[in-house]
Amino acid sequence: KMKETGTHLCCSIGFLTEKQARILKEAGLDRINHNLNSSRAFYPNICSTHTFDQRVANIKMLQGLGYEICSGGIIGMGESKEDVVDMLLELREINPEAIPINFLLPIEGTPLAHKDTSGLTPEYGLKVLALARLLVPQADIRCAAGREVYFKGEEKRLLSVVNSIFASGYLTEDGQGIEDTIKVIEDAGFTYEIESA
Image (cartoon, rainbow, N blue to C red; front, top):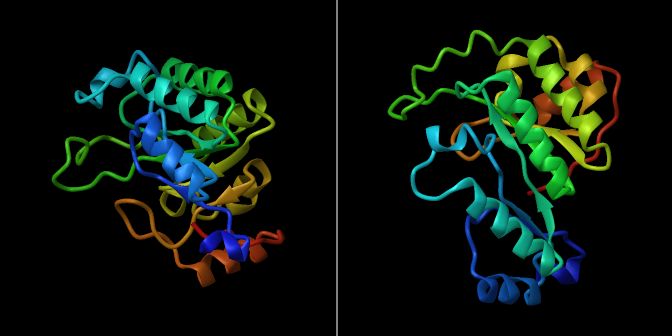
């Protein structure tokens, strides 16, 4: 029914079988978010339930069925700069339509609750986003979780690098509300379009 309104549908729903993916495609789903999260080498440090290669295989299966792909990662989990580059090179190979880059928000009760994020400076974050822009220029580069924490006061520089920013909530944390985000964009001298998820 939503397709009747012209809505572009995107879901973040984890692993799918080919049968499940076909059913959703026939129902009108356009895009699936399935993040790599990190480099292949670093991945065993953050996940023990499946492999990096399983994530890549899932994405390739979805692409083969005609889905647009949104796939990115999380910066600040303890990975090296080389890991960040390797993740971005993997994303270049996947060639997603959108690359959301998240910056770690340590959450109490999780294994990364006390992770040192002092290295997540605006300068470092901008370098990561700029490298994503250079390596995968055709993709929409999106600054997602952590934007309000790590780029506060640097919005003009941030918006010069990315295509979009997330607002009003992430998977695990509240984000800056829509009205405040619009003000940030306008104050930085940019215009905006709202794309709902």
